[in-house]
Length: 173
Image (cartoon, rainbow, N blue to C red):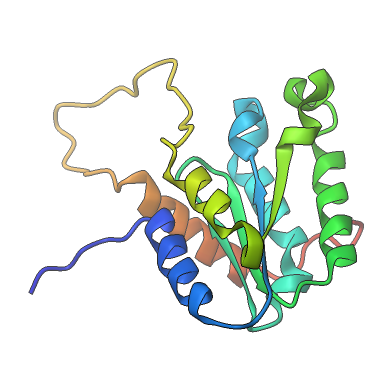
């Protein structure tokens, strides 16, 4: 028996295939965290953004994915667009000083898709080569180290699971 590790993108593709067969209106929201400067894509920032989605995730009909390039993708059934818009405004305000947002990128920071009409557009977006951050330096590897680093997607999946376990730490938002 072969154990294969699926990437978050594979999980999204599987979810989209199931959604296509349902008659329920679904919405997808893509947050392009990969377009922000690296300092704004760290563990803490990802944790804060995922917490902002909590009101939607308390329902069984919503699922949040952290993609390999640190972008977020929310899939939700019967979306309440006013709630989604409020969350997106909060996320945008967190990164208002990022050069991408300051130079007019705020229109490209979020994308929403009504899957009954636009699922093909979302699938095209996901099929594109991920905008993975480029390392500016290589980590030092010690010769006597027996540590094998986990693939990044496994770390990101663990991050998402850990975030789900943390109580709401942001009552001020």
